[in-house]
Length: 436
Image (cartoon, rainbow, N blue to C red; front, side):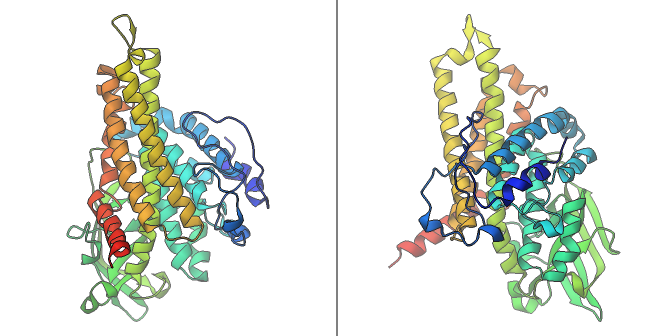
């Protein structure tokens, strides 16, 4: 299969985007004449002068990205989904293909081997992958919206030259913040970093770390001065073969089982000064800003999951499952449930794309990202649960994807900030706005 990114680059370089009128598949956003992008070639656009378009309209490039990723996921990932879930292991060939297709450096500038596309293009890819396998989707999500973004945003020119070409060509990235005693209170972390003559020495452990088994580059948060509390937290880049670094345990999980989640140990792990990401003591700021963006990615994973579960179920009830002499999907009670579920998916997707566009436009998107992740995870749970029931026995057995999507949905309310954390974020912003 030809590279998705190579085929889209000529379009992404175009100074203007034409409105293409083709009708897209059900559930896919339609194309728009405008794409709000933060890439250098589009930053000069004054969005206040643009004609308003529906939130879920996509540029021609973004729409073709959706079509291309959908085809790739269905043909190359779909046949492996069940086996990877049962084995609780990501097929290395799938990871290799993700790099070959250019999906591991969507926002990274072309000079470093990336696609140089906008944030929404990454969100589109994450959503389309999740329609087929949320495990693969989260691998791409964490790599793009957390790891690549953190280095692009907070790394210096040398960091860009050193790490980004690796992250776009074959090395998976991992974002290491959570610890056994610091989940929602992420900044209560106990991992420490000590200055040495030539760099830093890290000691401690991390838990619930996504992409651990596949990754070769890890962004690790450690406290360089515990007396300063969270203001001592600093970000470092650690390579997998660094002495003192080890993967202690791979977790066995309810869902997204092909996605690796591990415990990491750092035992006098010495890294050079050049592996400092940004500035000392700024790690907590980097983590907050990166996770705010990453939450839009998780929301897209959840909307993709919900849409994939919905589509799988309705095809069955409208074409195959019969009771009382008629297709189940023809009964009014079933049709009302199907319509309600799709309406909720559409609402969740509107929140996701609105947050993405606001992020690209340079507007404050923190509340929007929190609302998108909160609602999308709730919708994914409801829809995937209903899908199992609509399919009856076929939804309950491990032959198709229905029960897998149901299991996969649960993590959406937990990682990158639990639902309660999202509610608290939303409430604090609203309280500040409405307090005299």
